[in-house]
Amino acid sequence: MAMMPKRIKHRKQMRGKMNGHATRGQTVAFGDYGIQSLEAHWITARQLEAGRVAATHYLHREGKVYIRVFPDKPISSKPLETRMGKGKGETKDWVACVKPGTVLFEIGGVDDETAKMALVRVAHKMPVRCRLLSRRA
Amino acid sequence: MAEVLKATKRTDRGTHKARALRKAGLLPAVLYGHGEGTVSLTLQEHELEVALIHGEKLLQIELDGKSQNVLIKDIQYDTWGQKVLHVDLTRVSLDELVTVAVKITLLGTPVGVDEGGSLQQVMASADIQCRVDQIPEEIRVQVNALKIDDVLHLSDIELPEGSKLLGDPEALVCNVVTIAEEIEEEEPEEGEGIAGPEVIGAKPDEEETDEDKD
Image: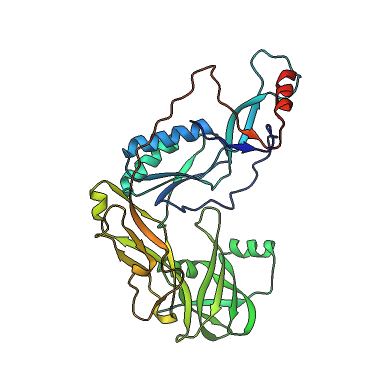
């Protein structure tokens, strides 16, 4: 099931800005290898889930996958063929705001080659360009 | 052997001046400690990078014709973790005891991993107290004997002679865990809809009226 918050303070949010680089969450903290975003983008809960599935399927239950971002921003949209007005649309998706430098996924407990191959598969599911990072570097 | 870096005193302060220095291949740094005053410095970026690549923690700087031993206290990197932005140096004498964070490297494949477990390193570095000239490059820990559900605490680590471990001895360094089978949750069928999150402080009738309005 897609990730979303359990409790929220407001049902809808404004779109906001994603200026600048990430100033936190930009190093590998839990696993041995990770992927870092090179662009600013909204990453939806579905895309994160697709990345997680891609990694776990490749790893065959070995190692551990860490997701370092959480989709806590509701994105609303109006239904198709609806006239303008009548208020803001209903929540369609949940997204994580990702700035350049944010580490998205990490993998630990597997050998280097396997971790890299799994992360390449995860990176293909992301809407941003990514690069591989290692804790040792 | 400590690397010798050429340093000059810096009077220009602020973001703009620091950026100009970095563009010119120099690096802003600060020197403090031993009850003497804080001095702003400029280092050669390349010299420091070479020292860091060699894993040096203890450096020698040449300032105003005098050479002094300094320890790297803190390094600020850019967002990408590649370019050094600023360095904090502290004055030390070679027989002084200092507290430093040293990387923990796990060596070998645990028995538990062959049995289907997974090795998790929880602690990446440990704080130790040792003489300045005896700072180890890394702490190597053999984990071959670990079975499934075995844990390695900080107190189990053997340190080089003259080093003392700081921090909680019961702190977890690594463990071998069994990987829980993932439960695939069924996707809700189309039209079924997913219940949204609970709105803090919202009255039930309020939400209903909002939906009616739409």
